[in-house]
Length: 152
Image (tube, rainbow, N blue to C red; front, top):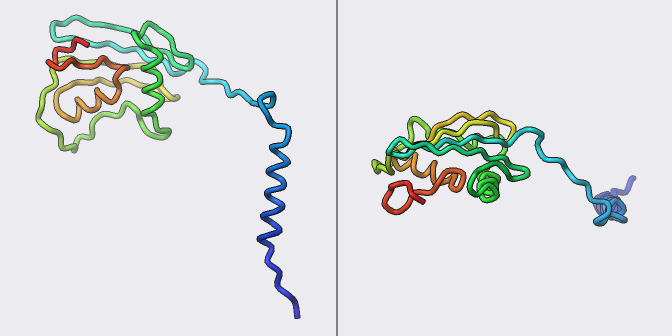
């Protein structure tokens, strides 16, 4: 007759010992830096106001740069809303039910590359869904003032 001896306690101890051994000697000197994306995370933004005036700027991230008025905050916001495997700049779904509110005539076109994906999309403030989509990316896109005139 054989005796059953559970292996779980021994396996757990062995695993813990290995993990502690791997961590021994690892400190700030052993840190590994991971390089950022090469040549990616660059967006061109074009905002058209009601009167037809157009503002253009470039945003580069990792590290933040370009002539965007607040590159660091825009990059931080994009990093915050980016979920790998999903399109950060996806349009509003065609079957979305949106409030019938108008956020003004301002439009924006964003093109370039973000998180390894090409970007070529337009933003409007034509209804509640489009307004929310725009506002989700402030400060990449300029914030609306309370009167909806576009001045920030």
